[in-house]
Length: 88
Image (tube, rainbow, N blue to C red):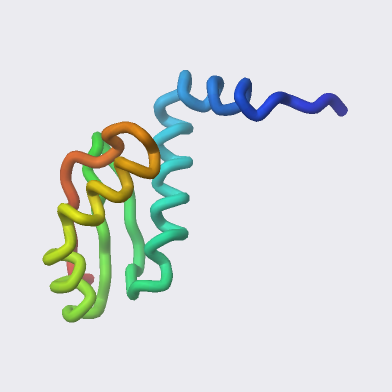
């Protein structure tokens, strides 16, 4: 078994947008999992968040810009342009 350099791995990840997108979505999902979020997906720089709780939906709605800025800051690039919240 050979080891791969983390920088090489991240470089390869960046060269495959579909894998990178899925990776980013999983990190965001893990981060928001404790806040009453049922599911989320990231498609074409749009973050779709699903929740059953109307209070959570409203709170997320109020904080859309703050969430978007924080996520983009953490990834050091514009990962999200828009956040769409749906109650299920």
